Image (cartoon, rainbow, N blue to C red; front, side, top):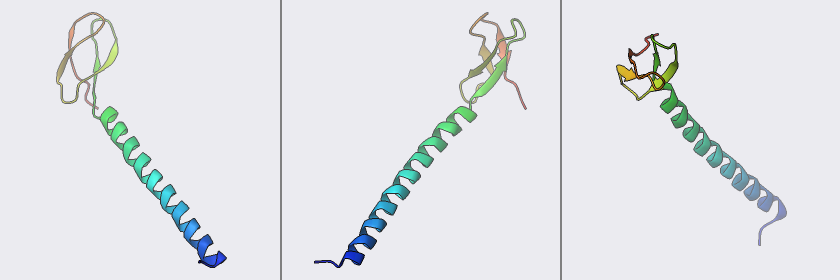
Length: 75
């Protein structure tokens, strides 16, 4: 049916396509996870000193430890 060299080339291309597909999938997945974490707002409680994160875009959030309202940190 196929010569041995043709079969080897087709096999190598198939393996390369699978690896490239997996690389693309995991790269996109990890990028989405990183962006989700990066976009969270960071807060520092002035009452108890606790550092915590809040939802994306929140300007004010209550501290989970002492329930004091804090303004988000701006870097």
